[in-house]
Length: 359
Image (cartoon, rainbow, N blue to C red; front, side, top):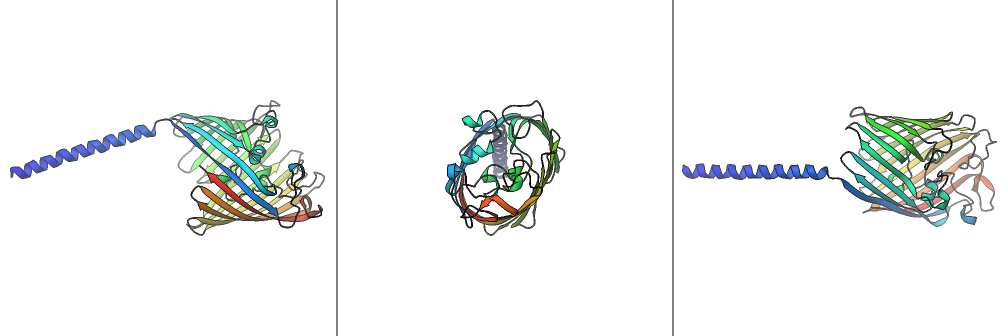
């Protein structure tokens, strides 16, 4: 009997010791989780592009024929950008410094009025304060909250970008508050410099933005100097392997033209490594000054384009290979869609093969 009692007593001691050890480990883990963290991440991308029914030259570095949207428009073997993101995450405060180098990076900061010509490389630069579990304040330069697509190719399924992305804002500089209303609803309110003026305020006027989110669906609004844009961005898991993304927007330029469009993004995961996706987009512009995307002057009252982009995405560790076929078809002959004789035409078909490495 004493032997049994002794054994039980030893078991209790061992059990208690294990529990104390586990508790100490959990406490250490919790303390480790609250330790400020410095992170370094980013990506590089390069691509090959060819028009199938148009000119493939680029005198003075400007392609004669290319889709009327941003990025991935250079013929032959071309460079995207190197993206280096440094971050510091504390329990309450932190910062992000997002730097870009290369043609895509230069296009991304086109609105910087003073320093872009001398090599501005800042894509995002902001500090934030977690005021509470539900409220975060951010101040500095941050990428736009409007739209389905973003500047970094790692976060887009299609390598080339949409007209809605290209015409919408890229970045803002100002202050914003992100508020978690509950588990499903969120709200963002912001005061910013005029769109894409990232370094300073040049005219003393401001833009005001808001975002209402519900379970991954977002209604966005921005207004500045009499103009406004309203945008819906969302997506739905139709099944475990099929996803459908949606983007729709309308912009009123208060006398400087308007545009509207809608894009659908169906994506099917064929395996763990390969996904195929389509972007179907309809975009129209009316008297939109600076209408470089469709390539028609502002004197054209109404013009539109329908673009279909089929993209495959094959992942090998940190490397993603993206072959892409794209067809852009405009309602009028476009100065962006030049044939081999450099004559305007209504459509342009192109092929892209992109390589993206993220770290």
